[in-house]
Structures are given as C-alpha cells and as structure tokens.
Image (cartoon, rainbow, N blue to C red; front, side, top):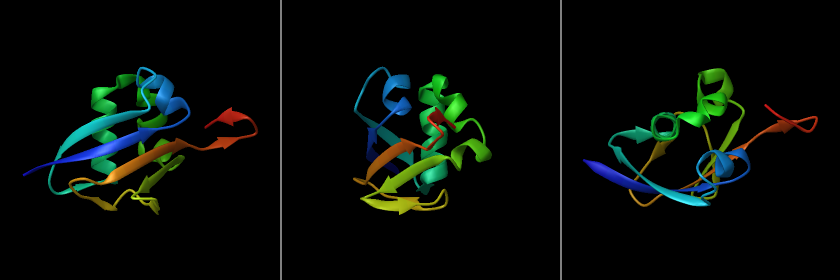
Length: 93
C-alpha cells in the first residue's frame, strides 16, 4: 500500500531540491526514515553528498511529526517530515 508524506526542507536540502520549501513523497509501506531518504536521493540525485551513505545520513537531523527520528523510525501516511543538515565550524558536513 502506498503512503504520502510531506517533507519540509531546510538549509542545503532546500537548495538542492530546486529551492522548494516542501515536497510530497509517495512511499510503499512499510516505510521508515531510511527508505524515505533513499527515495529523496532517487528523486533528487544532487543530494548524494548529504544522503549518499549511512555515514552521511547520520549528519542529517530528521524530525517526524516534530520529534527527532532515527533511521529506523517508521513513517506513516500523512506524517510531516523535516530535514536539516548538521553543520560544524561553519561548514556543512
């Protein structure tokens, strides 16, 4: 079964997704944060520097319905996801 989630984009995610503040993604159940990030990478290949592997994904702050989420956190139809990139010393990681 397919689900639809709203993804709000901040920082480099906003820029690398065509200066869009929000997108809608359709995912196949069961879905979690990791499968959502993989779907984002497939749709927006420029995100490979942020989401290309597990190490890079650890530097992405993901919120599901206003609560911090790990990669294995399930996502459900209608959830609101927020994506932020961690920064250190003024540089994007």
